[in-house]
Length: 215
Ligand code: ZN
Figure 1 (cartoon, rainbow, N blue to C red):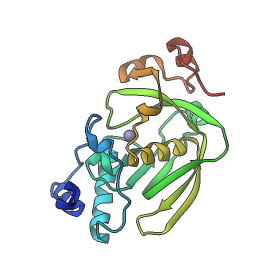
Figure 2 (cartoon, rainbow, N blue to C red):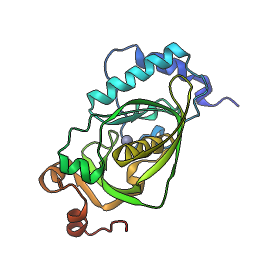
Figure 3 (cartoon, rainbow, N blue to C red):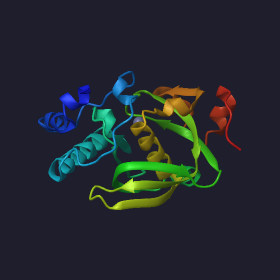
Figure 4 (cartoon, rainbow, N blue to C red):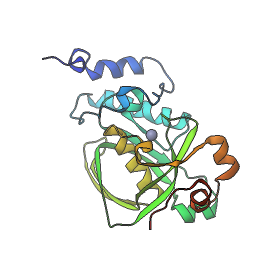
């Protein structure tokens, strides 16, 4: 039986999205497209269209601005994501969070597994959940496998903030939002974040808001 996706091939959808220049609209939480889980990329977009789509993801991520963007966030149900973090943060934040610059990367069909048992908990946000941030405990180090945009195999370990970014984006491709993994008592508006929770670590927020931290 034909599924709705068969009747509207994803390549046509991407062509439609790319018909307008500039950043793509980002889909907010509540849309089932963020919850279905994306299809494995298997050439549904030809090389030229994939390249144009990846460029649109990059433009959209930078304009937001964000440090990662997954295809379902623009309504495309393929396992494709981009990441990039110039990491413009103070030295003490860089040290505490391991927030080192992450060059632009394309992740195709990524999946990750924890390396070791260490977990770290920091505030993170999502372009699909604008205005809010929450603390998420995640594995400190992960092994990421998948492919790059040329189809070359990817098998790499990520630590620090880049490890958090690749987990967050890969989760999107599985229909998982960071809030599913968050300490909900930490949920803070951007205004509260700016006023109260700019410390390099989450300890003060944990104490004041009443949530636990790993280890
Ligand atoms: Zn997100």
